Image 1: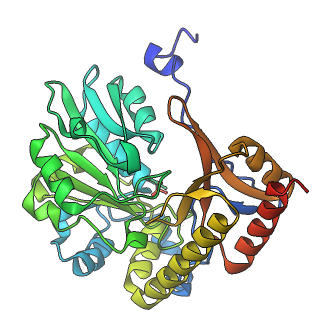
Image 2: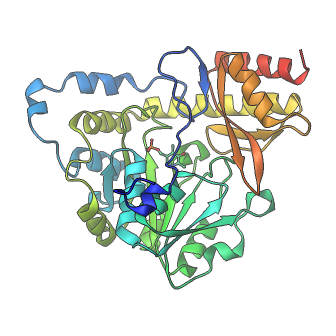
Length: 352
Ligand SMILES: *Cc1c(COP(=O)(O)O)cnc(C)c1O
């Protein structure tokens, strides 16, 4: 133990992101990035930024982005707060709502970062296991006195499953605290809970440009909530949490709806292919509303499949959830990436 460090920090493990090899030429299907490049308008907009603009601080609230997002989402601009990726937004929310020793709740298995955020905050956490068929148990909405924040990824990761809007509204109404609906993958589901924000001040919808806009490297996310909530979150964020280039790029991305629609069609078509072909290979695949699939095999160990694929130059995400089980989370790729993956998978499963 490092004697200088807060005990909460010294005893935590730290979030371990999926492997991000910077040089080796892997087919990378392990962290749910978009397999296609972003809209060319993003690069054009960033190139047009005059050098002297970089000498100045960026707009603290990213109003240019908020305007475009406001038009797209049908909520006023002051219902939106921007962040350095949605992970930044999740951090801001945790710091705003949860004090040391208080409690957060999230489903299990889901996004592992929620637990890390609780640990950093010195908070306690409750992991509520999904029921059969990836349904939320009634206990997920049970009030308790020191519960201060609930996170719900929708679609969920790693399962790719979706919880219906009515159920989310009912959940928020029962809860004594804010409910964060983490919509990192909602575009791929063709649905969103943004409209619920108008009906319930406890609902905060968190979104990112990392997945459906192919901008994981740009770092831009935002939250939609009622303005009295946004005003409190704004006090907690770093003054300049979004840099100038990311604001310019994100604004251009949201303005190019044609690129967005085409990309969405292509990714969801590839998802259907991936699901069907993995199923034909004998994998058990959870029907996905996201840009990845969760799968297991009745006989083959998921870990061995992961390692076999890695040896063959393909990275997928092996995940082991104690008390739940393990499996592979495979991101949707390009047509040719998926062909290579499926070929290698067939080879591994036939023991060649
Ligand atoms: C990828 C992901 C995020 C984080 O996205 P960034 O905007 O890149 O920080 C948030 N939540 C879930 C569930 C994700 O899978």
